[in-house]
Image (cartoon, rainbow, N blue to C red; front, top):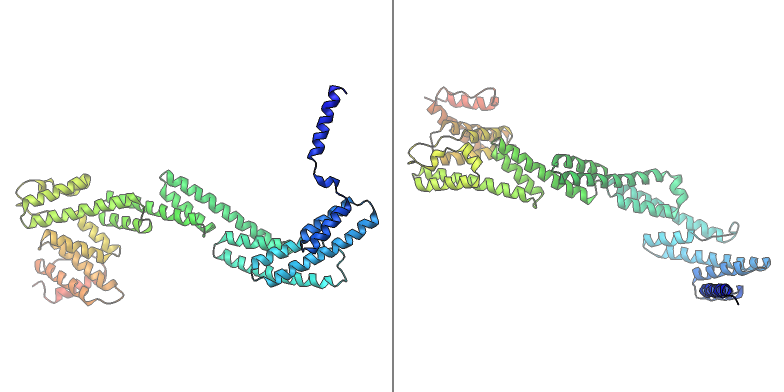
Length: 429
């Protein structure tokens, strides 16, 4: 034998050795397997074996006989699956069993007793299909698109023809598109956050929320973006010397995102600065000059640019004999707070400022009168104590300056009328 023939023989032998043993099985072998599996209730294995027996059979009549047996086993399997679907309380399991039954090839059922089983099965399928459809629509209305998609998938697997016939494919595709669109917008929002474009990021997350409201990353991203926008707003307020607004923006930022370290740092710095200035002013009023200067020095160390812009360097030296000048920027800010609807905050601020600066400052009394007045008039529940406090402040002003007039352009007619009522009482006499 030549070398080439030997090599060819070895290759053929190796190939034959790797072939499945089933190549040597006869139709009788497969029929035996089928009957055994059928007797054990293993219908899938029995159906597979009968199909192999048909393929392995050359005789047409014999093929027909095996096919008839296969049809009976297939119908028995269908009935078993249908009975299990009726008995189980799990809808998911019902769907699984009915889908499995629907994949079976059922032949020659018209006009037979099996026809009624098929009709009953279809009625069950219709009921479950309708239930899935209604739940999918309700779930989608709540923004839970993945769950809606899952329910629609079950409905389509259960009855693909009904899914198409009832126009559910476009709805299904729309939710898929919304999910994908929401995910893409979130990715864009995250990229904008990393670039420091917080407002643009917030807009992307809002757009994603409208498209896919139930996406967790939308909610988380929107919280972080809005918190960072508030930090930027706070910086803008601080640059405009509106520190009350700046702190309020930082507090709002931390309320929405407690992990915002920059907001926490800036808020702590601002509050610490304000409290230290408060201590310095109180000590100054008490003639504790050295202690006052030390407090002001600490405030400068906390925020040097803010100190240099709003405090007099004279408070750091000298004999503390000159009265402290009124902080005009703080008074303007308290007035803005009133106009912004934060009269209570303005009252707290101005009472604190009066404590720091002492009595006898007309501007402080005027603003306290206005703030108390707004608090009384704007409250849903009438507060006689706020109204009386407003009157007392205006009496103080008119005693000091009987002809004092509030600006008609700035203040409401009710506040102006209140001042005139006090004036008419002769408080300024």
